Amino acid sequence: MSKSTTANESTPLRLFVSGDKSQVGKSTICLGILGSLLKIGYLPNELAYIKPVTQCEGIQPVHTWCESKGISCERIGPVVFYAGFTRAFLKGEVGTSQMLLEKISNSVKKIEKG
Image (tube, rainbow, N blue to C red; front, side, top):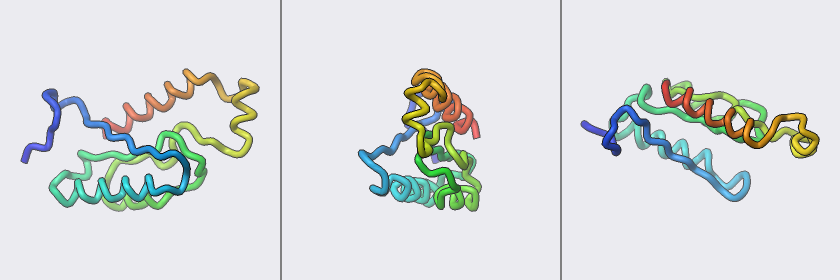
């Protein structure tokens, strides 16, 4: 079964799920997508999950589920909006926007390799 949707099979397909606020079901949608992909024949080593930006500092259920299925995942993303993050950002204590984007990009590239 060929599951590639691109002309270059070495280029992973990236799917971004976003919402306008927290608690709107983004993680639940991701669980549904990953579960459906497993059900239709994708292997766990062909899938990965990362939540590159979060307010949650603890391990989330989607990470636990991915680990139980053998899906590569990053437990806590590279950018965490902890209490006081905005103030620290404005003071220049957490790096620039470009630096944060690079951290995210590097983490996505790492996780897509499995």
